[in-house]
Length: 279
Length: 300
Image (spheres, rainbow over the protein chains, first blue to last red):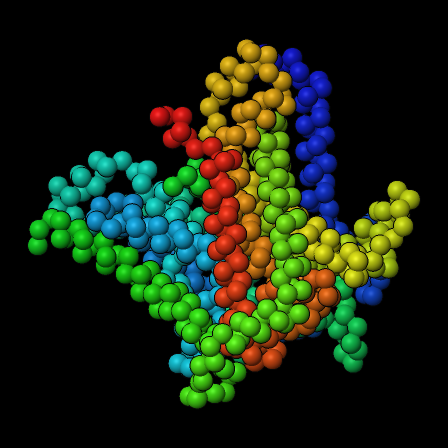
């Protein structure tokens, strides 16, 4: 294989490199473009080459609407689901990975099958139920939803915990550790990669969620995702959307997601690539 | 307590948060929605619900908007899923070659799938915008006439292009699958004189079918539920109606529920979608034995 690879270096690899470069350009182009246009003068037509650098557009993105209030709302919602879901998903994943009881396989199949359930079919009746109970405009939907964990996160945890050698918990049991203590003292400290992966994916999911806040919260409690999808950037007294400032806001909005990805990239890529989809 | 009952108690205690929430906020709303779909619930008559049998379901199938939207959604899915699956696999195969800077390219391909929907839409609006839009400027360079990307004729194509931009989200799973293919298979093939195309056709593709199967299944389930992108691509508020060709099925349900307060009818719409998703999933599962290669077959 090595020898063959070297032999075909000139033609084969050249084509592959060309393809990869082409794809990279295509994938990066919209991002480059939004950066360029977020710096253009107001109401100008989209350009490919920057002609001016209006950095103040980013300032307007945070002042023309109540940007920081919405950002704070986003952080509250993210915080709630991050803490609750990361912890309970870990507990559930641990139970499925390490405690052998009858019926375990069947229950795990149920968890996996909920991944295939169309979310929208349960979301609307949940909205009606919460409306009846009076959970509208409270954080209960996020607290309860978080406590319930997430099927994919449970799956990631289970895969990770399954790979830890059995000797670890046998030693703990001989020392008289309870099952919970074994989890807390032995397994959790070992599982930083999977906790980081789940926490980051969790944060990104909650940060970008438009529809749950739209259903459950009043506009003043909307997070950025929902606010940006219903409020337009306009100069006072006009109805014309200032595209340049909107794009600047869109860029600001994606920064936390991109940042957390780069911080945790190592774990996320490893976590998903090593666990794969083979149950 | 015996060791065994201690274990059982710990197990059920640990999974109880998930289990309780699953029953109360998963299973129960699902069935509650089914129940509502047989009533005349329109938002204000909760204490005075009347069972009206299959009436809402009859309405779904005679509602020309719903049937049109279902058709558009199936069309969108039929194009989006194969292209998205192929793109994610193709990119992963490119990356799986031991190339220099592979990690950087992996990040570049993966990143768009991370970008939140709102930012994605704002970005692509500049690409698609009609006069002075960037795609048109590029087409112009090649001497092709400008196209109204967000207009009636091309709106769905634009929606698909924008969705495919995020197809790199599937490369991680594909890379995991590619790494799992034993190297000696390729070595044996090269001794037999197989070329790159034959390697792909006879080794890579068959061994990747379990992953392709997973991606196709999840792709179908996801594509049939798309609604945010079409709403925001043409409009700038959540209750806006997208341009006609992008009036997808869940958009219609969303409109019925949140704009017209037709809750019971909306639930009937969503349950029809649920059955469609279930039916398509079963079809994919049933056909999988003809095209998905499972490792256990080889061991026997």
